[in-house]
Length: 92
Image 1 (cartoon, one colour):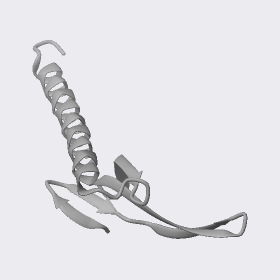
Image 2 (tube, helix red, strand yellow):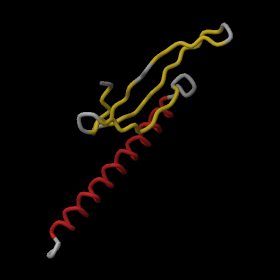
Image 3 (cartoon, one colour):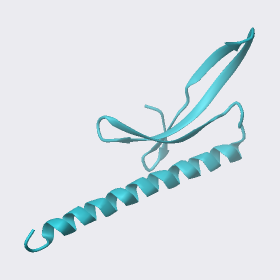
């Protein structure tokens, strides 16, 4: 599935080589994601490791992906609480 980074965050590294004007260039991407349910994958960010190879950049990208995952989870919790609250109201 990808490399587990902890707390439901994963990293997938697709690699490819492109030919442009007779010059071969290797591409290594990082894609951060969260599997949600059986069929949905939430894409949280990514970058081109070839253009930004530093570990500091990687840590920044992981931190941003974690923030986005936390935001997603918070929105889901609020939505669930609102639904439960509406269901418990008398007369509804």
